[in-house]
Image 1 (cartoon, rainbow, N blue to C red):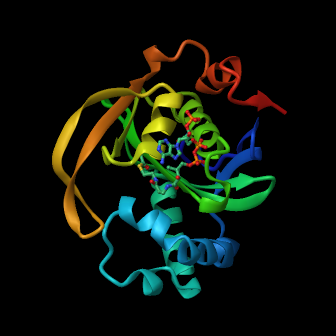
Image 2 (image 1 turned 90 degrees about the vertical axis):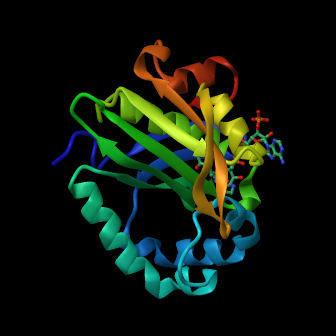
Length: 209
Ligand code: ACO
């Protein structure tokens, strides 16, 4: 067992409804596949390039294998593969990856939310809950994220929760078919007096249910 895994995060209420975050499940296959196939145009410009075509990579039959590799990585303590729920319904994923312990105690965080509920504060709330979990039970000191400079919605999410910009990574990641520049943002535990979720609540962006 690793500290902070498995865990249920939230609830936190935002404009779109009640946001909770929980570990991936085998039975997420159909919701995952349906949203990923439907929202391809919304997701693909911002996500790592895959080897197989989008439709094949997101077929319902792919989930069990993906789920098992995510769970295996989580059990080794290297990852927190989570699902974002809105009013109890699958609406996206929140992933904490490359968890490194020792003197670094760091990880990255990434996320997506279905298009239909965008702009309602869901990703902001989920990332806040994820950060509090990382700095609390998981015991991390630093969480970073990388985002394409053109991704205004994701940059707004990162800004909303208090990430600080550290620099521009040139040709950093193969996204949508080419190596793309990414902004590196980060937060260390010293920058969070109290919790990120409390800060959101105080800013009027969310409320405790
Ligand atoms: N231009 C500028 N700002 C925008 C735009 C836009 N086109 N669209 C939305 N926004 C703003 C909103 O106003 C809001 O900011 P505000 O609260 O300050 O007004 C913010 O972006 C969105 O906040 P939320 O509602 O909390 O986020 P949402 O639930 O809509 O999810 C997300 C945002 C995750 C980026 C979603 O659009 C998505 O899944 N996109 C595709 C995948 C993706 O880009 N994932 C992130 C990759 S980078 C990373 O993981 C670190």
